[in-house]
Amino acid sequence: MNFEPGMSVKVLEHQGCWVLKVEGQADFEEGDVLRSAMDETGGKSLPAMVVDLSALTFADTAFLHWLLEARRAHEEAHTLLILAGPLGPQLARLLTITGTRDHFTVADDMAAALALTAESSGEGQSSG
Image (spheres, rainbow, N blue to C red):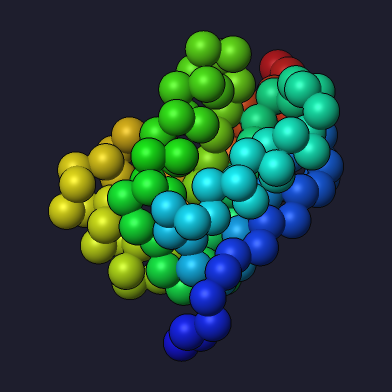
């Protein structure tokens, strides 16, 4: 387990959606990192955002609050927000204890998350 302080967020545009790859430890001190990552999207609206949490080693309630705010913003914009795992045991426990896991679309991994974005945009659906 990584006990280094801090968090990094990489923002990519991939297969027609935003991907935020979150690594490290997310706590109240990292709010600026998350806001900066969101600013990197430049307000460009894409049909989905995948938040890759597979390399997240710790998350507190401030990070959960950010996820809930992101979910609300995506609902208002009629876009999809997907959390991609595998989720670490600490984050999975946080979502379960707070009763918020069912408020999110959670995919087992990036491949499953990207498949969900393709389904939501109509790709991969056969006509006929």
